[in-house]
Length: 285
Image (cartoon, rainbow, N blue to C red):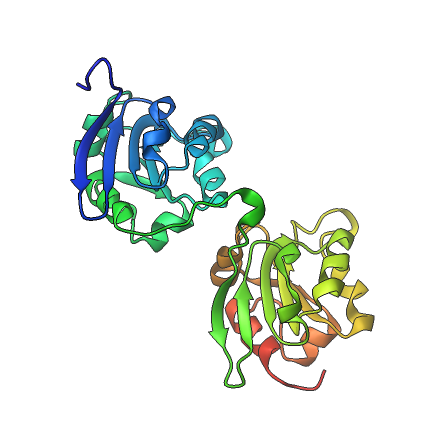
């Protein structure tokens, strides 16, 4: 049991890095000692509310419990709240350890879900909490405020130095993309996306269809940018996570294309990664 005067139990210290794995019974026990340095193993559910409390102190990483997941994934929704703030996070199966006992979670828990950042650290479903916490302890991360987090990741570079870039929103397109890069982004392609597309004018783009929407309003932007020469496509929102560019690149399946993208060989039913390569080619539209 942790000391009554201290709600945290340090279960592992890496003195060389100056980092700890701190076990605690509740997400509310995360505090300023943990900022940027510690992996916080807390025996709480990982909904948005506990994630808010965790994020206020921006630890290196966090591990909670899935609490049966719940309707609409409410008990693990904080995983993606934390991902948006660049904090790796995972949860353990609630049947693998005692709720409300952080040390027991550390010693006995088994990972059931994790966000993309934790996956990038090597965390996998079925791994013990102890193993996952150690991986998270040894990975350097930069904790950013939401407006600073763009998650631009280069997925492929062509021989002439142009890129396929996965990012979470077309709003994160830059002047460096103009007539140069293909952007795989994770927002819908309704009319509100058009100003962002025209501002950065990428060589090509793939966004989400947003579930299509009434009167195909989720893909209407594809046609609206055709007169400006932009080649674009969308992926099925049922298959790729909106707000996650990497998911769109890896999981996306093309659901709609404009005529410029068709001219490059992009077809409905094609994987987004394959379509992005076709869009990157210097082929006359």
